[in-house]
Structure formats: structure tokens, C-alpha cells
Length: 195
Ligand code: G3H
Image 1: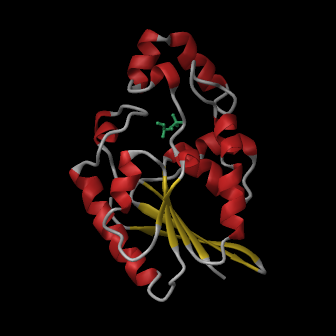
Image 2: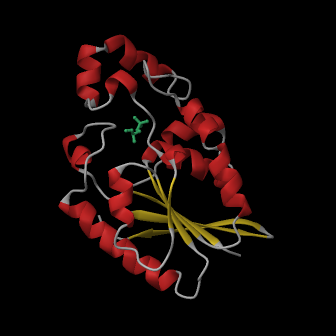
């Protein structure tokens, strides 16, 4: 069975400031993670010549992939973070203060709530369909470097978690979730490479 490795990008400058969305580069901790990830991938996929690295089109995932050598890298727009529309670049505090109705409606139904001029979790789940089809077709391992909301949806698909749980699944930074699809079902391992 071939593994699928799921990971968020290394910590970004916006993560440090608590801002959602954006397209910032990595923090120092994020850069350290990119190196540790490259090391891990080199050892884990040593003899896997056909493996590939999939990222979003956002800097923070591309930079996280950059120290990984020896495998083709593919950028998918469908792996980009949930589009927070008019809230892009804001902190949750700012949303709560400046757009309290938006904040409340999201809290009430995080799965269906769509950011004005942005996306909902349901939108994200829908746009991931081609990625999932392609992942299912792959014979070789794939490393997916993406974002929290997107990985919640991808993980839920493979781990067979119900729709309503998706927006609340924990996908911590600096941790690799390894999914193995075998005849007996799906197995999961987690590797926390740093705090
Ligand atoms: O920037 C977006 C976050 O990664 C998604 O988090 O859906 O819990 O607000 P959230």
C-alpha cells in the first residue's frame, strides 16, 4: 500500500499575527519545519521514485516544499486555503468587532457559512473533488502540503468522518498525518516533527 502524507505549511508570518488568509512567507519556525519535513520525506520515500509533492498556489506551501529534493512538485489551485473574502487578512478579533453578524452566523453554522465574496467549507469540499479523484488514481506516494480548512476536508474523506465534523477537526501545524490505504481499510499515523 502506498502512503498519502498530509501536512499544513510551516508556520507563516500571518499565523504568528493571527491573521487569516493572506499570502505571507514562513516564520523562522516555519522555515525550520520545511527543513525537517524535507528530511522526513527523504527517509520515508527513499526508494519511491514515482512519488510527487502537491502544494497549493500560495507561497507558504510552496516555500514549505522547497527544501524537498528529488520529486516532482505540482501546484493545485484547488488546494488553496478557504477564501475568506472580505475577511481576508483580518484577525478573528477584528471580525468579531467589525462584523459581529458575520462572526455569529459563522459560529452558528461553520460548515455552511460563506464569507461575503468568499467560500464556505461546503464550497471547499466541492472544489476538492478533482484532487481526491487524482489522489485515488495515484499508484505512488503523494505528499500534500496545504492549509487547515482544506486538510480538514481531505482528512475527513480518507478517515471517513461525517460532514458536520469537518470544520472542527484538529489539524495541527508541524505534524504529518500519514494515511495508508490497504485492503483492510485505512490506517493512520501521525508524526509531530516540532512544537
Ligand atoms: O484561515 C483559515 C483557517 O485555516 C481556517 O480556520 O475555518 O477554523 O476559521 P477556521
